[in-house]
Length: 213
Image (cartoon, rainbow, N blue to C red):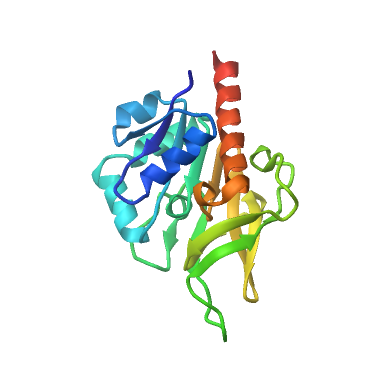
């Protein structure tokens, strides 16, 4: 049985993330223990809220190095919403340095006439890494659910796995690099498409576990 650690740093709706993973066939464990994170077969980093408190909480719980080490060792990793943003170098929302796992910044949507900020509700993805396992079985341009005022801007465009358009702005909606996948939207709130993405992640975890056993 594979173990998926859902990282608790007081900045996420852990219940929703866990319920989504359970529907996808996993048995997740909520934890803020560096030891449990180290022992887990995969990590999920959800998040809702502001950038600075998020990274402060991660560092106060001594979770930064366990997260970085797990990703560097090739463990499957899924970041959700704020759990995507804190992987970057920093954010226009605050002054704290991010985890610096993905080079780039988090930026705020530019104001436009009739543009609502935050970007909230259902919107369509443009899958820029269309063959990535995270998107397996999805329809073209799948609808998913967003709630955010900031978006990630990676330095290397090759890590961009999906984009979304809000007003005239096309921004990164997901990144993927090696064992790491992270999304700006909420798969646990995205109905069948979100469940499929979570199921694909669980399948990746099981495949990785089988290869390492």
